[in-house]
Structures are given as structure tokens and as C-alpha cells.
Length: 277
Image 1: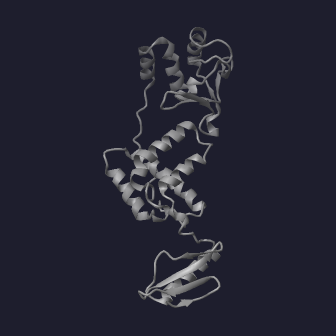
Image 2: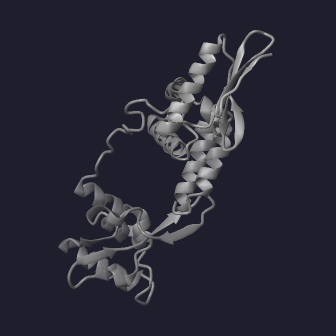
Image 3: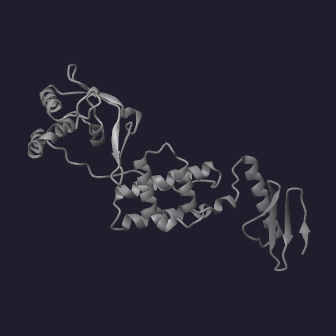
């Protein structure tokens, strides 16, 4: 066996006649992931690695050996800013739709073709729907973007144009007579909740967290600063709206003021911190 020496990289010939390229990384020798037919090919590989290192685009092939299942677990654990409900959603998307197919693949082996095959199979299946597929694709794209930032991947293999865009059909909008019909149908203590949701534009979690001190009947406005989120186990967690834009002041229509005033007098909890609904 002959060996060509260099200060950084070297090429050696195996008894089989094929050549191995090795180079120094962090004081240790690393080998190319494959052997080469000629010495020239092995030296060309070393030149490419060296050029990538100098450009800052080189990725250690050993680093990419972590599986998507392992990396996604760490990815979630390192995001304490995510809301509990969001964590539940992400865990469900990973467990049900992403990891069964891609979870045991090493990051370095997640190619655009494999991602495209996974995405296509999801779209063709009876479940989940297209909206969930788009959410799963966005989650995978975000996880692998972080892997690129962590220098475990050279580039993100999620390259399907428009795959993360949701195309859910537009939901029908209730007419004003239909809103009042719904309110008249349900239990009286929840009638005003229907009207506030429809005519003021509060979400369910925002209405559940609404307290007396947030309602200004004199000036006809409601201040939205928090919401309740319900987890799968039934636990309710109080927190701010999903985005900064969710913290807002909204107007109370004049026709709704008497309804809301009667509700506060009859059904709302006492005290300025008392829940309205």
C-alpha cells in the first residue's frame, strides 16, 4: 500500500486498487465517504473539500449522521418560546405524518427526492387533508432550516414550490339573521357570547379569558390582551394572543351594548377580574 502525504490531506491506495482520501478536521483525520477509482479523483475530492472549507460551505459528513427523529426532538426541546398548544400540534404532526417515513433517515440522507416522495404520498392518502400536509411541510422545512444553521446540512432539501401554502376552501359566513337565530337557539347564558364572537370579532380563547375590567361600555370598546388555550388533556392555559397584533382594542357595536350590559349583570363573575363568560 502506498501513501501520498500532505500537511492537511492525504491519499492512499488500497490492495483493491481503489484510493482513499483523508483530511484533517479539528486535529483528527476524517475519510471521504467513499473510495475512488483513481488517485486523481481522490485528490480532486480533497481540493473540493478544502475549497468548501475556505468558502465556509463545508459540512462535516459525520455531523449529518444524526437522524431526523433525534434532531426534531432536540429542536422542540430548544424552543421554550413555543406555546404549549403549538408544541402539541408539532408533536402530533411529527408523530403521525413526518417521522413514520422520514424519522430514521440521517439528516445527510434527506434529499429533495426523498422529501418530494414523502410529500406526494401524503397528498395521495385519504388522510390527512391538504391543509395538514401543508402544515407538516412547513414544520419539516423549519426544522431543516435550523439544521442548516447548525451546519449539519449544506442546504435545505425542502424545495417544493408552494408546498407550505394552505389552500383550504373558504368557510361560509353566517348572515346577520342566522347569527341571531343561533343565539336564540342556545342556552341564554351563552347567547351574548355568540353575538360578541360574530359582531366584535373575538376568538373563542379570547372570549373565555375576557374579564370585566377589559370591557368599557361607556366608550363602547373591549381590550383584548389574553386568551385561554385548551390542551388535549382538557387543561386551560392563560397567555397572550398568538402574535403582538392580537393585542388590540375593538369597538362594541351600539346594538350590542344592551345585550352585553344585561349579560354582565346576570351571568358574569363578580369583581373587575371576574370572567365575563
